[in-house]
Each structure stands twice: as C-alpha cells, then as structure tokens.
Length: 350
Picture 1 (cartoon, rainbow, N blue to C red):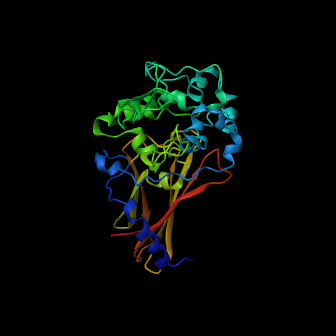
Picture 2: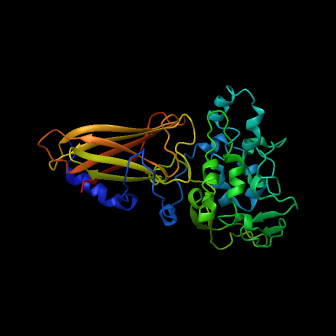
Picture 3: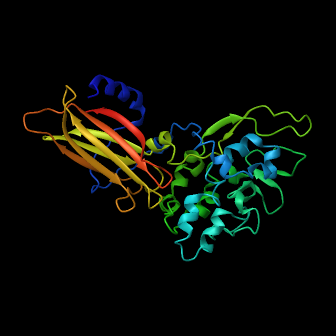
C-alpha cells in the first residue's frame, strides 16, 4: 500500500487545481467567477511524432515554406488530421448523410462567410483537413491574422477576428454542429453568453507560446521570437489540460465525506459521445487504510452540464474517522488502447 505521506506530497503539487465547492448535482450551481477560468495553460504534448506519418503532405501546404514552426504545430493537431483521422473515417461509415460532415473536416475559407451556416467543403487538398486558408484567408485574397505584419509573400491584414474574443465565431461555426458521435458543445458557450464575460475558445484551447512566426523573406533566417498562440491546440487528450476542466472538493459529513467535481470548462463534458471519464475515490483513515470506495462517471448519458457539479457521498464504517480522500481519474476514448490517467491526488478532509 502506498503511504499517506507520498500521497500528501502529490496533493502539495496539485493544490492550485483544487478550489472549494459546495452543494450537490441537484442544487442550483453558483456562478463561477471569470478569473476561475484562467487556466494554467502550457503547450500540449504532441499526440505522437508518428502522427506526422499520417499526414505526410503537410509540408506541401504553401504556408509551411515560411511558417514552418507554426505549420509543424498544426501538423500534429487533429485539425490537420481532420480528413485523414481513422476514427473519423470509421464513424463516417455509419453516418447517413456523410456530406454533412465534410465541410468541417476540409472547409473552404470561412472568413467573410455567414457564421451561422455550416462551412462548405473544398473541392481539392482535402487531406490537409482544417488548413491555414480555412481560418486565415480572407475574401479579399489577403492573409488575415492578429498582427498584419508586412510580407513579400502575400498581402497581410491585421484582423480583430483574431483577438481572443473575436475568434469565437470562427471556432463556433464548426463546433456548434452535432452529428454522429460529435456533440455541438459550442452551443453551451453561446447559450451562456460567455464571450460577454471575456471568455474565449482561444483562451482555453490555444496555449500562449513564444517562437519565431516566420522566415525572413529577404535573409532566409527565422524572424525574432514573438508571443502568439500554439496551433497544436489543447484537447482532452492532453492529461494536464483535461485535469483543469474540473474543480474538486471534499467536505466532512456526519458519516464520512462528500466528494464533488465541478465543471469549469465553458461547455458540457464530454463533447464526444464515446468519451468516458471515471473518477475512482477511496476514503482513508490517518494510517492510510481504505475505509470505503466509490466512483463517479462522466459519459454521454451521465454528462456534466456547463457550470454544474456532481457529488458522491462516502459513508465510513462506524467508530472510524476519515482523514483523506484518494482520487484516481482516467479518461477513455476511441483513440486510446487503454484508459489514460489524467488526475491522481489525495485531498485532506476538513
């Protein structure tokens, strides 16, 4: 058995993730302050270098010639693999109206379009998935972005749509769609008017980075590093990122403890039907002995709505006192051969 001291060391490392929460799933959830959504983002770990082999044509994207670092980030993302992803292709076989999926997996440029309409599929280069042009090519033929730096390679325009708040509609145009196993979670973001509270898709899913944005078209050398956003994108497949979607709490009760998870993402969890999150908990006494075990599930049927929480009552045997709660949370999804651990900690019971 692992010692309680070791588990308490884990707790010290993860204290910043755990804020107090009250109530049960049946109660009206309290509003979560905007500052509580400011996550400890870091560039996500690539899913695997071998994903480059799944998308061998990424260097053919003309933008990669000058923006190689950004293009490499993108090449490892599910955006780049949107048309080639094996899971997408498998699911597509069971969808009746397959063409309804195509526009979001290989879209024509979306700038200047009606955001409420589903993107149209492009006739060629579909293997590039959601490519650079899909988000950055404007109807004026210029490349739009957050800086608008001059370039001999193409016309550049600084566009407010690429401010954190302005980009929401660009993301939502695809992510509000529910089809096949995909749940249109962006509708929650819209329904709750989270943009008016200063929240954004980019703020949670594109980690701040500092790196060279491009190759100097005169010298051929990388331009000096500049602050921007990672195009690798944060997803639940990154354990560090997924862990931050939940606020955890435990409080003492007359018979043991009440453990709670609170959804602090900007939408329901999960966003795909075949995603499964399992929170396994153990109630411990001061010697580290397990008094009772329990489990909370977050699945398509038992989803966690926006800004809601769910609780699990753990009753200890009589004449025993629980002092800690040990948590082991795993994430299972079609991309995994086995469930992946994303959160492991010990919480002290006050």
